[in-house]
Amino acid sequence: MKNSGRKTVKTDRTSAPKASKAQRAAAPTHDAIAKRSFELFLARGGEHGHDVEDWIQAEAELLG
Image 1: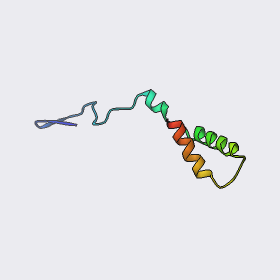
Image 2: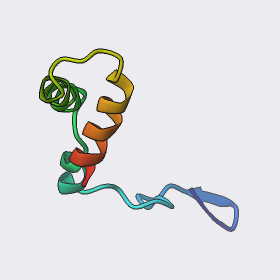
Image 3: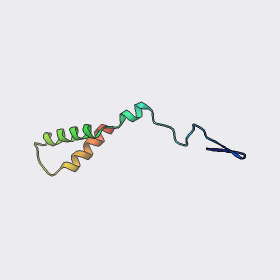
Image 4: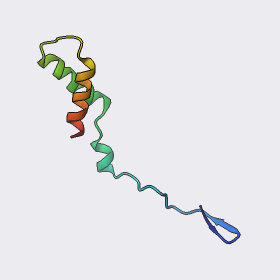
């Protein structure tokens, strides 16, 4: 809202720009990260105990 004398006026502007559709679409979904994480698990031969590492690596790969 903007103060112009005694009257307060609402405006459409915000302090932060809105993210475009391309920027919102760039973020990987939970399912995409889970799928890639499982692929990493299988590539290691199904060895357990590295789930967090796989998840972090999958996020890093998908985020670019």
